[in-house]
Image (cartoon, rainbow, N blue to C red; front, side):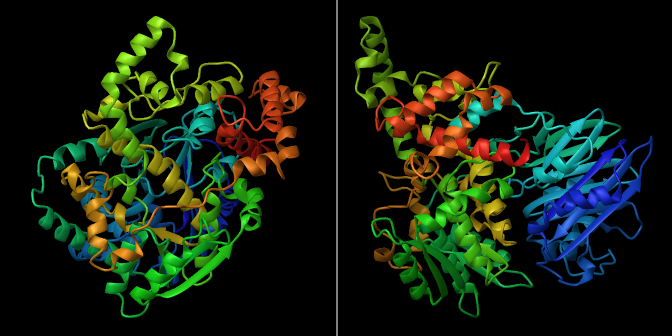
Length: 622
C-alpha cells in the first residue's frame, strides 16, 4: 500500500516540486495523491506527500497527509496495521471519522507518544510531524517489510519510500558511494543502512529516526537480537504444544492479513511456505481463495503442476501462467525503472511475472516469505552445519597445508573448509576468488567488506542459528523483502507476509532449534503443520526451482551491451570501475567456457551484477 515522501528543510521546495517527487511513485499508489507544505520554526518548512493504493476505507476519508483534530500531528504512511481494529477499542475517546488504519496512528500517537509504535503490529514506513515538538519522526516496521530512505545534508532531511523522489528533489547531487559497490557485486544487493548514494541511508528495520533542529537521532524500538535473547528464556519444551500453538498464531496472522476492502489472494508456488499460508487462508475464507502460480515450459524445472494439485485439494480459484525464457528476458530492460537502486537478484524477474498475473485479479496477495529464515529452510543451512562439524579438522588442514605449501592443491571443498578461518564470517563461506574479482573491478579507495563482519554480535554457538539471524538482518530485508516490495508495487499490488507477523517471529525464538531442524529435516515444524491440511505426497519431492540463465544471456543476446559497458573509454569517464582490468575480464569471460577458477561461468553472478549496475547507472546517472 502506497508510497510516501517529504522533507524537513531550510531549502525552498515548492508544493509543485514536492508533487513531482511524489508522482515518481505513481505505481505504488494510483488511487489518490496528496502533497502539503507547512511552516516550521527557525526557518524550516516541512513537506509531506503520499501516493495511495486504497485497501481500507476506499473513500476520500483515507486521504493523506492526515491530520489530528487539534492540528498537532500530521502523518503519511505506507503499509498496513493489522491490529488497528483492536487498537481502536483502546482509543475509543478519539473522534474517529474514517475506517482506515492511518487514523489509528494519529490517535495512538496522541495518547502514547512515539512509543505508540511498539503497539503497532504490521508492515509500515511512517512519517510523523509533531508541531508541538517541532520534530519529524520516521519509523520502519520490525522486519523491514516496507522500505524507507532518507537524505541528510547541511542540516536538512528528505525521505521517501523509494530513491526516485530523492533523486527528483531540488538540490540533490547523485554522488556514488564506490566503497559499497564490491559488496553489491558479491551479494547482489545493498543492505541497510547502506545505499548507493552519498549522504543517503535506509532506516533500519525496527528503528525510529527523529529529526529536529538539523540533527538526527536514531534508536531501536524492536531489536531482533535482544528480542530473541529474551524469548529464548521462555522455551517451549513440548513439540506437540509448540505445533498447536504455532498453528494458532499462524492462523491469526493469516486472518489479520485477509482483512481488506479489496480482493485478496495468495502466491502459490507449491512449496511448504506458500502452501501453508494458502491452506490457512482457505480454512478461514467463506469462498474459494484466489491463488496464482507461474510455470515453466521446461519440464525439468516446472513445479506449477504441484501448485495446481495443492490448489485443487484446497478448493482454490487457481490461475496459472506458463512462461519461457523470452518472457523473462523481456523484463530485463524494465528492472532499473522499478528497482531504483542497483539490485541484481535475478529471481526478481519471475517475481515480477507472478505479481503481474495476480495484479489482474486482486489488490492484495499473501506470500510465504520469511519461513526459510525463521525455521531453517535454506539449503545453505545444511552446508553450515557440515562446516561446523568439520571446522576443527579444517583448521588443522589449513595449518598443515600452509606449512607444506600445498593448501592450493587441496580439492575445492577442503580448501573452503580449511580457508574458513575468519571468526566474524564463519557461516558465510567467503569465496576468495569472487571477492578478489569484485574488489578488483572497482577503481581504488577503501571498500567495506564484501561479507558481513558481525557474526560475533549474535553470541550463538550453533552455526545454523547464527546464520539464520544473519540472514534475518541482512538477506531478508535487503534482498527478499526488497525484491517482493518492488516486484509487487510495479503492478500496484500489495504483498503481505503472515510468516513475518511479530507474534510468529517472537514465538519462533522460543522454539528449540531441533523443532526447526532435525537430522536433515529442514523447517520440521512448519512441514508438520502443513501436513494437517495437505497430504504429504503433494509436497514431499526434490526441490528443483528455475534459475534465470544468466551465463547464457550474458554471452548471448546481452553480449554486445555488456561489452559496451566495459569499454575502456566509457569506464575511464565513468570513474567507478578499473578500465583495463574490467575490459580484460569481460573479454576473457566472453571467450572461455571455463567453469573452474578462471573467468568462466562461475563468475556469471558478479558479471550480472555489473551489468545491472550499468543499466541502473545508464537510467539514473548517465
